[in-house]
Length: 342
Image (tube, rainbow, N blue to C red; front, side):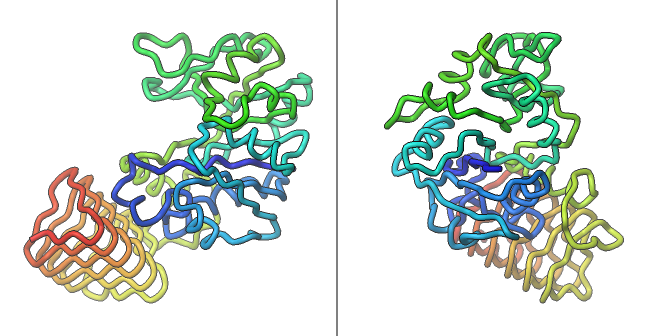
């Protein structure tokens, strides 16, 4: 089975983290994010993955390489952004697309039952089947009302006013090759706005997933996904957590510090005496001094937090930045890579 992962965006909502590393390989619970998706795909029989990349594609390829746990990884490079359908046409025109393909948004963490979605697709003789997730607030998502037999009745991208259903597009599709013919070549195309509406009433079905699903595209949801992974709310192959449900990776020095609950320390971090890291994420090689406090925030690779500094909540410190002794990075603040905060 083949999958095409849409991983070409710039991750603007996650800046400054994505200024130094693209979202597909940004650490989540200490692992490149896309490895969670690859593990999930592998568990459902996928052995050939096309990664549609644009922004910093060389970094994605450097981190993930050409194979992952027996899966072949190939790269479809967007010279300019092609939207959510353009990469499908690019892959087809490049001669690497199978007759049936899974298409996945590259910024979701999920354990929905892909095998059941494929089985529904086959039983209906569908041309396309969309995974749907039920959410409390639909304001940020496209909603997909369906008939009793699962046939999609409309595809309504983000709109103001009450939504006709709480079922949203979960960004996991089973598509037949005929769908590619609806995608104009050589330009950016939205699969949500230009392709799926054309398929309504022509073999497009919805599959309601009961599994875990979250879009990690904002700092708030990135942290929420981290907490859910640490707490075991979504299936993963993470190492065992400590008694505070925190993960402290190899080479860290934390003696005299309080780590947790629900925190992640990447490899080779150091946290000084009487410092607190609580519901926070430190990427690799972060150095934290004495009597510091980092709460509900993210500190990117190579940053330094000097003695007595305070960070958070809801703050992000970019890679290689320095928060000087006694400095404060307040609620919701963003510190650019390499910036110094006094």
